[in-house]
Image 1 (cartoon, rainbow, N blue to C red):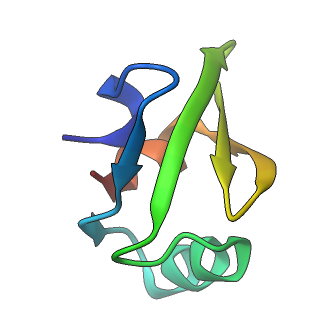
Image 2: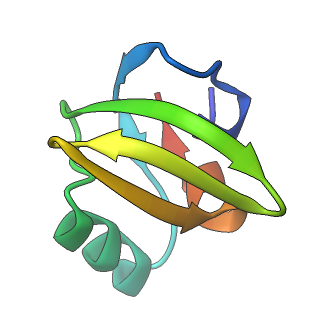
Length: 69
């Protein structure tokens, strides 16, 4: 399921990352890699705030839809 459909506060494993090569590289630079753990903290106003590698990162809803958990 896409990250945007995930509940808050539940650690999830990243299964696949879609999108263009540029978007995949940007997400990889932020720490979003297949096999990594991500936790949704909140989602509002088209942005999703997640915890990844002990950091909080805000990504757009479009990017979150490309991350399959």
